[in-house]
Length: 207
Image (cartoon, rainbow, N blue to C red):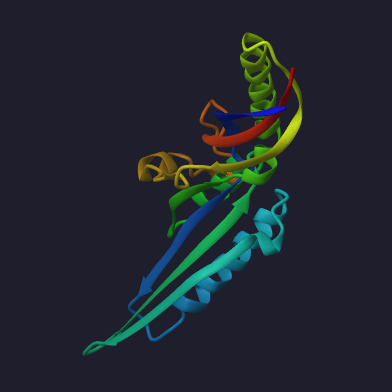
């Protein structure tokens, strides 16, 4: 009995399962106070409206808050910046972008696609194993032998760095309309990425 080692590198395209929409809320005012409270109320309104589109409250994260107040000769200038992250499925994305585009002082700064690499690696590894077995059978037959089992096998997978889309400010400004209508770009909002699987199998051979 002998051993035949077969290695397979198999790459598939997988579809994003969700997106992390990064939004920036900005406001400033030359009054004694109040802009921070107004922007906080705006964020609360966004959460409520997003909930109407199926986005749970815990899918909206406050990633950062910056407050600054400067005293002038006659007036006090107050500035507030709030960084939000909204996690949305592909089917929710047009509505989420429409809600964000509809609010003055809110801009979308980044679109981060997320993938379930582990689940996607399962069928990819199975396909790689089928490829390895076909090759092993062919090589063994050419040598007058037969594959009778597997001694050991190992696999690994990798993906390129996450893809970030930098949305065009013009695109989102054009999406602002009454009643926060979904942002319709005329195509499905989603993305794919390459998942590479490396499989190494030791096949047992018999005459």
